[in-house]
Image 1 (cartoon, one colour):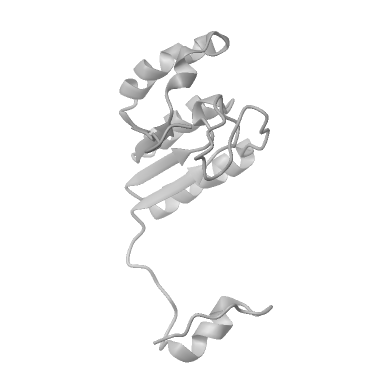
Image 2 (tube, rainbow, N blue to C red):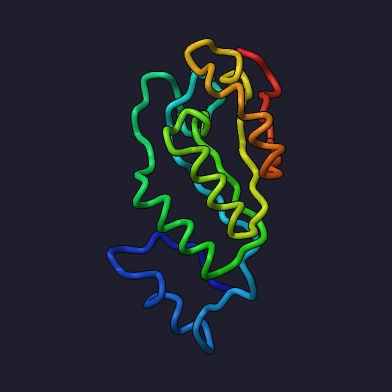
Length: 146
């Protein structure tokens, strides 16, 4: 049994080396989950990443393309896209379409309320966009409403 310890400034591999007989290797990678931004139309108290309308952090297109290249290389079954409200990322649709062109199943974790806002009228195409590229939607709701 390996005891739980907070490691000082050493790399995990160096600490684990004495306990293993070879390199750590995964059998396969089924799902890649990626948070493409913290901007959200809601500011829920239960949000574990503290997304909200005033958050501006978002994944660059360069990083999104790196994710797509990685998916092409490792060929996971599923790309799980989350955020904030992933639909608010300016390259969201492009990212989904390119991921689907690689043959990966796409899940979008969304609150869906973004589709009801007038200033995102162009997002009204998203339900058809989802079905067009066969995207699953995962709606997360709290067990208690604030």
